[in-house]
Image (cartoon, rainbow, N blue to C red; front, side, top):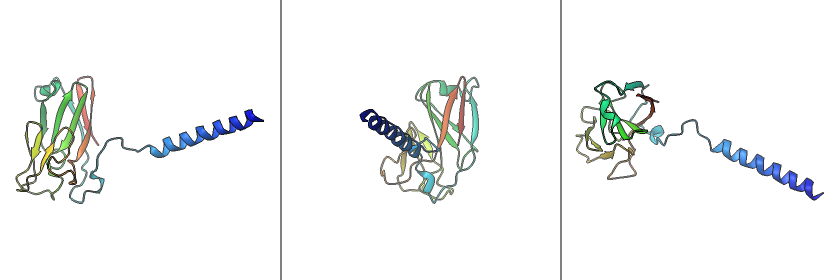
Length: 153
């Protein structure tokens, strides 16, 4: 009789663990907090950056970034953290309605706009460096496959 109870407990534990695992899964595994950002839309992005081309070659080396104009809302910055990990963020300030001053410029690993509010963002994490309660930069997925970095949402 004890083995039947132990078997039922084991089955119950397996079902419980599977349920927790399934309910914990999210369709998107990135940490993008912009789903409720009233200032931004999410334009379709699907880019392939060939690292053999001179304009994308800097991404082979950690610490370099490349700006892709005419993509996303105000352009996209792709940053090489290391040869296997890349970040990609939209260059519009996520705490403004897109306008003439909201396009951000990159200096080192920081992005900022000319709207006069001192918003500065880290292009590795997307977080505002002065106020963590503000919306982070809009992130896109970036994955390297051989000599190509795919940027998409």
